[in-house]
Amino acid sequence: MASLLKQKVHDITLPLTPGMVNWPGNPSFKRELFKAISRGDSSNVSEISLSCHAGTHVDAPYHSSDKGVGIEGIPLSVLIGQARVVELASTNNVTRADLNGVDLKGVERLLLKTRNSAYLKANEFVPDFVYIDEDAANYLVEKKIKLLGVDYYSVERHGDKRKPAHHILLGQGIVIVEAVDLSKVAPGDYELICLPLNIPGSDGAPARVLLRELTVSK
Image 1 (cartoon, rainbow, N blue to C red):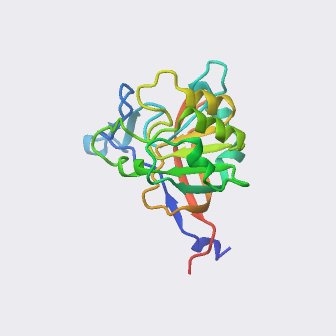
Image 2 (spheres, rainbow, N blue to C red; image 1 turned 90 degrees about the vertical axis):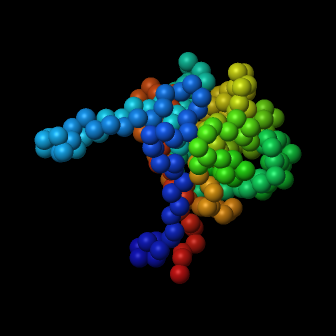
Image 3 (tube, rainbow, N blue to C red; image 1 turned 60 degrees about the vertical axis):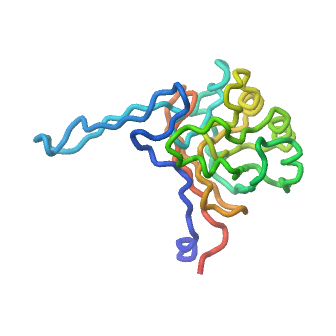
């Protein structure tokens, strides 16, 4: 047990802060003190409001289909387990050819590190982010990937109202985790721990997402 405590854990969750970058048109994150010791209350109690897709979050199948299950229907066994971080540094959009060059044998959970990682902490939304194209989404289905994590706020090309990647991935039960911060994470295999808030019936939920190294640190 002592050796497990030495394994390094990477928190790849974006902090939820007022004024943070948000998907255009979605409600922004807000937090204010509903009760405050400074105002004579017995404790500090915050009130928050936000989109279910704010910051680092999980998309449920209901996000792209009225017939899809809500966030509570995603098995914990998919959200926790071994995952592979793959870096695609030069691509402008993830294609089947990009993924075909990656060893996905035995991989069920895939996190893609791209140039998006440099955009996550920018002060403004960057519309020209790396996205998953339709053929790449179909390839992930063929490879029986169960969870896909990306390092910006959507798997979809900005402005594409057809949302093919969402429909393909969520339609086949592939869990989508968006806006994971991989900027300080090296490619390789890790244990993924992804815990979205349990909001029954919701199309998505903010999540705390961790990667634990599989080798013991000295």
